[in-house]
Image (cartoon, rainbow, N blue to C red; front, side):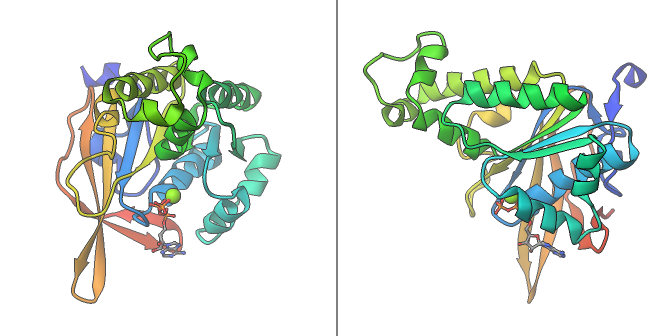
Length: 249
Ligand SMILES: Nc1ncnc2c1ncn2[C@@H]1O[C@H](COP(=O)(O)OP(=O)(O)OP(=O)(O)O)[C@@H](O)[C@H]1O
Ligand SMILES: [Mg+2]
């Protein structure tokens, strides 16, 4: 039965075996963690490995950090994104739109440009911020909102936000890429998202954690959900080395 699900390996040492060898192809997966837990580094490594050695081009969209800074961070681990961009194996770009619909159209263009199979949208809160920033979206999402309302008021309406989030995941899923979405969760909660919806709307959830243990913190990774997959549910050590992330036993 397993053989029927095509898998997309992250190439991150120690990680893929937690999920039967990789993400099921074209899944949209949430990468949840508190600030500084390594969500962007994990995502950069996923895109880098795909383009550099696993024969899958990738698009990395940032809604927050500057492209330049992401590239510098990547270089610390020996991942040269400029070189991959020159070879048209990677697109890494910042998007400052105020409208999710436009953002997704632009993402689609970049995917088509290099025939990408992997996508990162960093981050979910960045995308959701666009929802509350731009009123017009609400008419796009099939008249769920009164025309007079402002975005900000809308986000306070739980049911509407729920629909917006499901809609965003559906649109991302239509892009035919295997997609990772870093998602910030507040420090000190056991929730998998700050919105309480995205962990249900996605196909999988990976959780990154920083635990305070003595003077040195310990970092862990666990797979909380992965549809169509027998998962290793344990928390595993996660370390940054010179070459990137290593997941322990
Ligand atoms: N070269 C490096 N070697 C070891 N650790 C590093 C290195 N570069 C960054 N880090 C660690 O990784 C952390 C940042 O990782 P990353 O940017 O991926 O986190 P994040 O979860 O995306 O954070 P945010 O929520 O702010 O976006 C830093 O706080 C630092 O502890
Ligand atoms: Mg980040």
